Image (cartoon, rainbow, N blue to C red; front, top):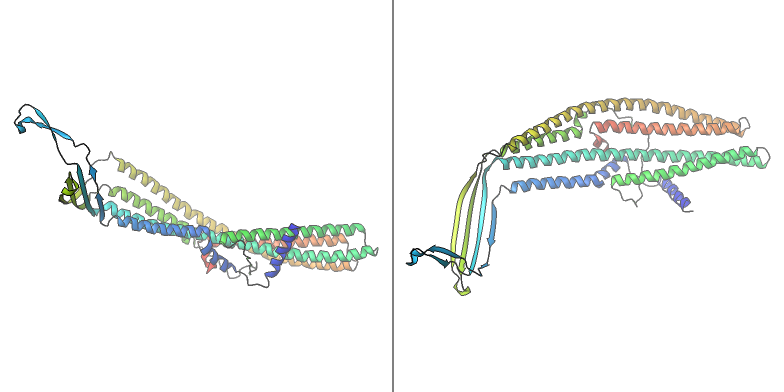
Length: 435
C-alpha cells in the first residue's frame, strides 16, 4: 500500500507539471550557480585568498609591540669582586647587587625599508587570488555540465513515463475488448492471458519510470542546491536545439587558465627563493621605562630609548636555496608539459565530441522516422485486430516494436543533448546556456 501511495504521488506530480510554472534549463543553471555547495565553497576560497593578500601586505606595515613585567627577586644574586676595591687585596668579596622589585615596560616598533622577498610574497598572494578564480571557473563548468546532464536525463525519463502511460492506456483498451470477446466466447483464454501479461509488464515499466524520474529529480535538486522537500517541475522538452552551431574554442577552457596560473605561481616561487639571496633592511625603535625598588613607596622610574636600522645579509646556506630552485624548475617543466598535453587532449576531445554530435543528429532523424513508422504499424494492427483481421500475436509484436522505437528515440535524443554539452564543456562555454 505504501508503494502504491508513492506511485500515486508521483503521478500527481507529473500531472501537476502541466498546470504549474516549471523551471527551465537556464533557470536551473542560474539557480545552481548560486546554490551548489561546491560553488559556495569555492566562493569562500576566493575570499580566503583575498584575505591572504591583505595578510601578506600587512607585514610591510609598521609592527608595534608592547610589554610589561613585574619581578620579585626573592633572593638577590651576589657577585665576587676583587678585595682591592674594599682595601682587602688578595681576597674575593661577595657583594649583593640589585633591589627586590623591578617593573619595566616598553613599546617597540619595526618597519621594513627594503625586502625583495616581501615584494615577491605580495606577488605570490595576488597570483593565488587569480588561481582561486581559475578554480572557480572550472568548478562552475563542472557543476553546470552535471546539472544540465541531470536535467536532460530527467526530461527523458519524464517523457518516457508519458509514453509508457499512453501505451498502458492502449493495452488497457485492447484488454477490455478481448475481455468482452472472451466473455462472449469470441476470444481464447490464452489470448486474454497473454494480454494481461503484457498489461502487467507495461504497468511495471510505468511504475519503474516514475520511480527513476523521482530519483533523477532528487539528484538534480542536490546538484542545484535546491531544497529536497520542495517540488521541482521542469518545463522544457527533449526536442533538439536547432540553433546550436558547434565551433572550436578550446582555448577558452578553464583548465588552460588553471595551468597558466600554476605556471605563474611556480615561477613566482622560484623568484621568491632567489629573493632570499638579497639583503633585507629594516628600521626599529623602542621606548620604555623601568623602576627598581625595595619598597612600593620608593618607586623611581628610569626611561630608556633606542632607534636604529638592521641590515640582514645572507652569506651561505649550504646551497639549500640552489637545490630548492632546481626542484622548482623541474616542477615548472612538468607544468609546461601538462600544458602541451592538455592542448592536444582538448582538441582531440573537441573533434570526438563534434563527430559524436553529428552522428547523434543522424541517429535522432533515423529514430524519429522509425518511431513514426512504428506508430503507424501499431495503429494499423490495432485496427485490424479490432476487425478480426490480425492476431493477438501481431498486436503484441507491434506494441513491443512501438515501445522499442520510443525507447530508441528517447535514447538518441538524450545522447544528442549530452554530446552538445560535451562540446560546450570542452570549449569552456557552459555558461552560454545559463545566460
